[in-house]
Length: 237
Image (cartoon, rainbow, N blue to C red; front, side, top):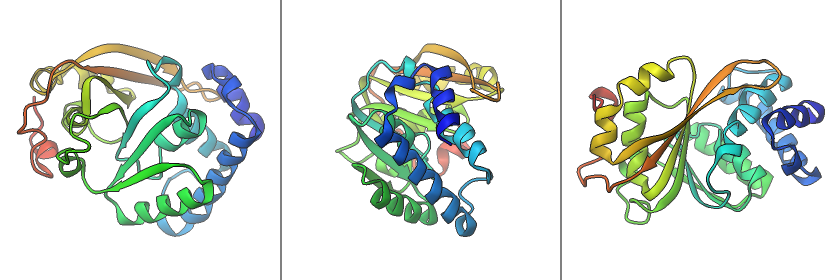
């Protein structure tokens, strides 16, 4: 794992961010993920190399393009902790919130937190509900989301969390252009704009990725997000 992780981080451009302590955290993460995956089906990847590439390295791909390396960061629909936990390991100055509604995954995340001894907060619930809490409403610096929802839906989940000047980092694949084309209305209503689009290559395997950075320009109207389930059923298109 060590050699593969270092090679991948070098390809991404963040090799110097990895020291022995962080390597150990990634090893513990890998071990716990494999152990818990046997009963909770947290990932379809079973081999260590695949987990390193498709979860750890994939999570870290956009980090060189982040506008900040500290502040508040929320991972929307984190699942087994991706991309939030790998980002926290490499950049511990982020105040990280992991948002997840699945109870089994919450159980895993709480165990992971104890094993890693990392300072992050686990938020159990749906984005549509948590984004209405005063401590989170338009109060965070950054949001990240990987394999959560099509972009018009993801915008409604994410932008209400961000302060003006905050950014959403959306991890996308082959359908990125199609999703971008259908996101104009959601961006206009929710107060965001496309800041930049980064085309990346996943190290080792050479697969293409698209990272979309959305800047929060204006306040999100109070009616958004709509109640739980509605954004996915009736996207703002």
